[in-house]
Length: 548
Image (cartoon, rainbow, N blue to C red):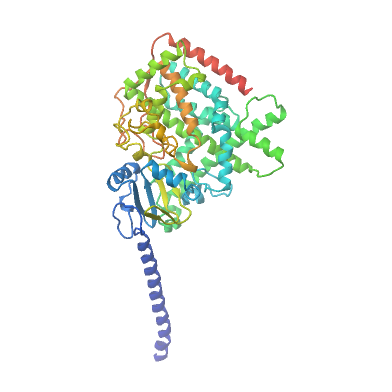
C-alpha cells in the first residue's frame, strides 16, 4: 500500500507541474494579446479602447465609413483604431493620403492577408485576385498588362465599342424600363469582355452575364464584414470544424464560381487567338488576353503567364471595369430622377450640342455640365467610400506619429468628400461645383494652386499605386451612356418615390449603389425615337467593322 502510494507521488508531481506550466504559458499568451490591443506609443488619437479588444466592440458591421466619419469629426484629420492586436489608421485629408499612398507608396501599397480568400477561395499559387495581390513584381506585371485596355490610349481604341454599347442601351429603353438592372449589367460588361477576350456578349449564351455578376456578388457576400467570423483577428477560428463553420462551405462554393468564371475568360480568349492564328486578317481589333498569347508565343517564353494566371488576369481586368462602372451609372440615374433640375440642365446642354440625334463620341470632351454631373455623383456617393486598405511593410514615422509594421491605412473618401471647409453644402448633389472649380471646391481654393499639389479631384477609386485601374474607363463609359440617354429620355422616380438617404437608400458593401436603382425612362418627345434608332444602327455598324 505504502509502495503504491509513494510511486504515485512523482506522477502527481509531474501532472501538477504540467498544469502550472500550461497556466504560465496561457497567462503569457493572454498578457501578450492584451498588450497588443493597447495603443502604441505615438499612435494617432482615436476612440478609447478596452484592453483585450481594442476598438473591436465599436467597429460597425454595416457601412463602417459612416462611423469613421463621426470619428473624423471627433478626433481630427488622422484617427488611430485598434482592431484587436491590429492597427488601423484613417486618413481623412488629401494631404495625408498623398503623404502615405503616393510619397511613401513603395512601403505602403500592400494588401492585408485575407485568410478566407487566400486559403479557401483561391488557394492555388497561380490563382490570383487583384484585391489581395501584394505589391510586388508580379502585381506590377498585372497592372502593366491592364494598361492595354484601361489607359488613355486603350480607351481611345475602345471608344467605338463603348459608343455602340451606349447606343444599344439607349435603344433598349425604347421598350420601356423593364429589366432595367439586367440591361444595365449587360451594358457594363459588354465592352470589358470584348476588350479582354475578343468575345461579344451578344454572341454568348443569354445567362453568361448573369453568371459573371453572380460570381462577383457571391465573393462580395462572403468577405463583407459580419458575413464570416473574423478569422484574421482571431486565428483560432480557422480551426473550427466545418459543421460548426458554415462559411467554409460557402467559401468552397464561391471558389467554384470564381474558378469557373476565370476559366470562361480563358476559353473565350483561346477561341479568339486560334481564329487569329488561322486567319490574321479576320479580326481587326486586339483584345488583351489574345494579345498576351501572341506576344508570349513570339517571345519564346520569357516572363510567361501560365494558363491559370491568364484566366485570372482576364477576370481581374473585367472586374476592374465592370463593378465601378455599373455602380456609378446606377447612382447617376437615381440622382437625375431624384433631382430633376439637374436633369433639365443636362438635357439643355445635350440639345445645344447634339441636335437631331444623340451626341457622337468625338464630341464627348466638349461636355461641361454632364461631365460635372458624373464627377459630382462620384463625390456625393463614392463607389468605394472607404477604399481598400493599404498595409505598411515596415515601421515608419510620419511627423509626430509612429506606425508599426503591418499598420493598415484607409483613404477615407467619404469624409474627404464631405469637408465643409472645402465643399459648399457637401451633402447636397450640386454638379455646378465642378463647373466653378475643376476640383469641386469653394472659390477660395484655386484649382490652379492644386494642380501640382498631389491632390486628386476625386477619391472614389482609391489613390496611390493601388488606385483602381478602371477609373478612367468607368468615367468615360458612364459619361457616354448618360449623354445618349439624357438626350433621348426624361428620367423620373418610380411610383412610391426614391430613397436617396445613405442610411436607408443604399446598399452596404464594398461598392456603393442604390438598394432600389429602378427609375422610369420616357421619351422626351416622339421625334427622338428615330434619332435613337439611327444612332444605334450607325454605331453597331462601326463596331462590326472594327471587330471584323
